[in-house]
Amino acid sequence: MTADGTTPETGSQARAAKLLRRPKLWLMPTILTGLLALLLSLLYMGGIVSPQRDLHHLPIALVNSDTGKPLTGQEQNLGTQIAAAITSDSSSDAAHWQLLTRARAQNELDSGKVYGALVIPSDFTDSVAALTTAKATARPTMTVLTNPAKGSLGSSLAGRITTAAAQQASRTIGKQLTAAATKANSTTKLLLADPVNVVTQVGHPLGDHSGLGLSAFYYTLLLVLAGFMGGNVISNGVDTALGYADNEIGPWHTRRPTVPINRTQTLLLKMAMTAGITLLSVSLVMLASVSILGMDAGHIPLLWIYSYCASLAVGLGVQAINAAFGGIGQLVSMFVFIVLGLPSSGATVPLQAVPGFYRFLSHFEPMRQLSDGVRAILYFDARGDAGLTRSWSMIAIGTVIALLFGFAMTAYYDRKGHKRLTPQPA
Image (tube, rainbow, N blue to C red; front, side, top):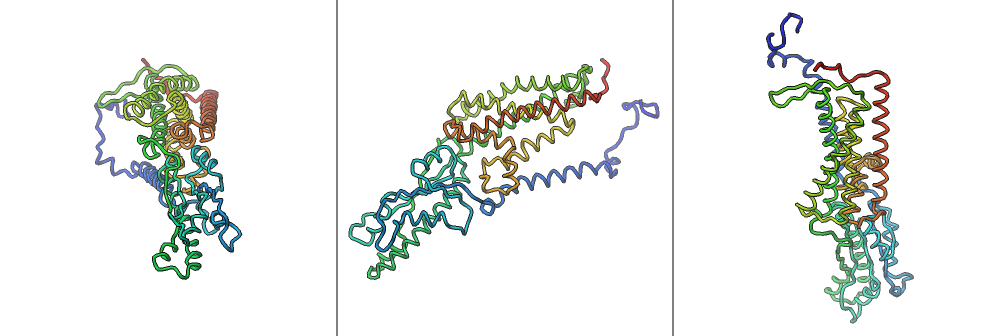
């Protein structure tokens, strides 16, 4: 009943044209929409606009296997000279060169600790020395090893850096050779000016159905979305079923009788349902990704258990945030799990190539933690040192935080007597 004694159905109806002339109606939606658009643009685009400008300390292995004797008049062989020049170069901090043995470098590639490697072979000095004699049979070679399992962009950046370093070394050696070969003909001098052949090989190969190193990221995104959307659907469904929210589908509107229940018990119900329903969503994600689409995946039982725990942790976090923040909980959880998570995940753009703000977020943002674990299972033979151990730890910590935060907030609200809604009669 309205103030003039009419019901909403029989009273005069408001018209859109008249309501559009009310400034207050425009104010809040305009401000919020503008702020969201600005924040999303800055957060998403800010992480990928200038990866080369923001690139700092990308881990790359440097292998010096050269066992040749130093050239005449030199104290060290060429491999040692090149390695020293590369590691001591202070003109750029784009790469963090790690001087390793060949076996150790392969182990680092296989565990995802380096994005690539530059290998100087054992006969490098000898093959360079042979160029100026009749014993020359082939150009000296340095090998660039890529690691597509770290993502196509990260592997590409590492390949570019290592290739540039090898080419710079070739030009430096070329100057020494041409200066010494004063009697060589023009063809020989052209060869000696850039004597090293740079060969690129895959250091840690992937299968043909791994999305060029991106399947781990998209699979992680599926797990996060399954937990996020599932959590919100369950939350809204429970509120509707218990009579704390309207159910409106098209022109049909219903409101169930309100079930007397406090906030803590409601959250417990939602979290229990999340634990059960996540089993179905994760199973369907794996069925679609692995069985139907044929994504390369090993360790299937482990991948399923990990996927369930990862998605469940997200779902419980969503329920806790919704319980704490109420109506704006979905927006808050969207920022926590998706908006801030995507650019700081390190899955598409290496964390060494994003601004410092995103590297800071990566220490605790859920998507980065989950992505490392998925990548370890799919690409690195489920090795703990490839990120899987840390991911399991962060899943456990995230789950505990979600439970403690959610139930602490609902217990506080219940203790203060903050009821969710005035009960509606049956």
